[in-house]
Image 1 (tube, rainbow, N blue to C red):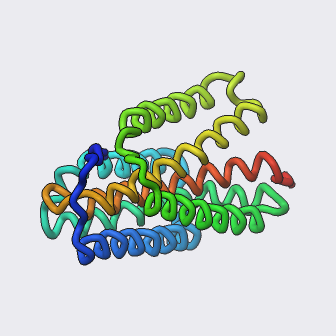
Image 2 (cartoon, helix red, strand yellow):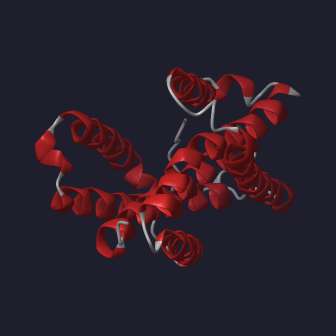
Length: 229
């Protein structure tokens, strides 16, 4: 992903380009749901063992090469559609574990979705109404993202980071972090000039913000309200 700094006197994107970005984002959300459906119906055998690693690596490859394929038509349409499909497909085991592992799993999933929508809406209102230049946060957001990745790795390998208290702290930080990141990216969408503003890159960035915000909201709610079977 590429996160460029918003200048203090930006030129606005044309309305048609801004609409295209949000249209791509909406398509990505719809494809994510399709990916989840496919995973629940047909993906059980593919989401176990080594196959899961293959799909996750494919997602990472699409992210790290996005600056290349986002400029090449029709690859930009193809790979942009493929990424949310894979994201929905690979998140299926986690969704299923919530539904089967918690007595109130379905309720928590719905509440997490509703909370994500509300937080994304609040981030959008803030990004549109604030006079602050959120571009100054670019470096801090980058290092915060690295920090979240490192904390995730520590949770896998270090028992001290696997406690309920640490999960609550990390997931709570993730919720706030991606709410800020969402506001930052929405301001970028509003303020970047047409020169160098690739709609696929901006839509992908916004999609990753919302997708990760949902995951952290879900984790946070599971710690607080989850009723394990």
